Length: 126
Length: 237
Image 1 (cartoon, each protein chain N blue to C red):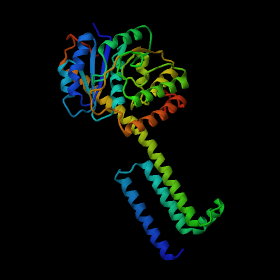
Image 2: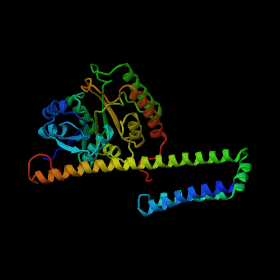
Image 3: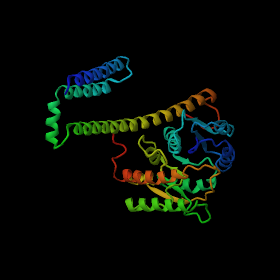
Image 4: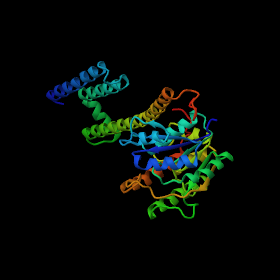
């Protein structure tokens, strides 16, 4: 790989890396997601510095063009990441639903505690 | 005396229908506790419900039909109601049909469903809906041996065991349908049906219309697959 390319791409990865660290420091990005992105950066650096590893990988999987193998792995990685997010969103959807129901029921309990004396006629709520 | 019957109505912008529905319920079931689960309505649904002496649980944002029904069932479960009836707020159910369902639960059923198929002179919806209903009823029967004619019915009575199942976090919370029945069957609940006459919904926009209906069928087919083959709902993550 030409030196110019190496420098440009290393600079890009470095910017991304710093951005991730800064997001984590501001607590915008949770720690468990930070390491995922840091690992992605390091893998990218590895392939920038050691193009021969990519060629070996291409031979290993029976690929023809190293760049194709790289693109394929990137797409696979992103697809898996999306799947992971879908799973997280599913879990969050359940949690948000449960919380919303909880808020509605608690609010109802509070309203009734305010207005209805315990010995009032009508339904007893606790 | 503490009431043993909770009638819960999930309601989204039903201020126009709710008055009549709650009035009719009050006349037929004076001793029941009425709970309107207001699905973040933008109209006067909550105010109308309160003016009829109903309890109102207002959701902070819209959860949809299943989420509203489930909130009502959770309330019933927590306050120890032996029987919770889910009733639609749009006026399509008849308060008198609650009677046989309540009797069925008193008689030992965990889940009693009001079926418009069993009622001779009920509105049953257009061709597509009847077809969908019999498709899901047939699938539920094929998958579990359960003979239920109207799995889409929103009119249900639940005993404590039924309430506990329907209140689980991962219970189908969009439109509990044949998938809910399959889960109830797998949980070994006693399920039964009683005739219920239904009227066409007064809402212009129904819950399942147009492309939504197609999506609904595919969602339900997949949900049935999950309900039939999936992990036990009680199992922790």
